[in-house]
Length: 380
Image (cartoon, rainbow, N blue to C red):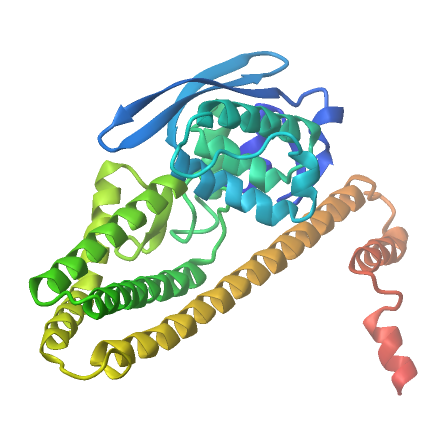
């Protein structure tokens, strides 16, 4: 669902994904968002923080809780916010630093202050509509009746290449597919490089045989866990079988993990063989097969990462172009309706002037000062 349609049922008025039509602080219909930390709990080896979320609207108030890990908050909110606000982040979040990694003492207090400042930024209109969508989606804001109507309307326009209920519902399946393929290749190269680098360090310290093989398996487990954390934080991902971006429930998440395991299986085989071969090598560390392999993999990983960066930039450019075209189409539709409303019904001799009026409106909307026929005449 696009930002305008997603935010409207809550009372926000956005012009497009990166601009407000009415800033939340100046819009009577915009709700007041607030966050408070209600505590934390340990689940397995992870700490989950319980966040109380409240949207205090003009006609109704929505209150709910959402449990998130610190890694989720950093991945889905803090990092995108720092990147999106650039130099303004430090100014807006002065005195409210984000929580430190690993959850040292004082983490809850820092996180509570940061979340409160985040809510202020939303209420003041300091962040874009698309980021407000990301915030509400991340904290699992309740779905309102207006969302169902918008989703039903959108289902007639863009087929399967959409983000289900997410910030961007647009026909960019080919871009999603390409980025996903490059991402899986990047994960493969990253695992192989990290496994080789860790085995090389252990080998240089004198470790042999099963110690190196165990390190490869441990590296694989950590990469899979990192992938799971990223998926949980995002909440949705491209599904190559459905050929669409899907919301990740428990089943879909396990499906994504299984796909990655299948992708990494050949890489695991190569990494184990390289570790076993290193145990038999008698050359000096700098010229060992592991050292050469690490150098090669580092270069390959860098190349794949650059490919993903370019593909992501192409996707962003396509989204911007689509938004501009959609806005232009909307303006033309409004111009046509205005002309139709004012059109005379019993004065045929006025039709040419009506057509000129309509054409001049379209030219102004497109930023043109001359009609094509005039331009061709002068050219001749």
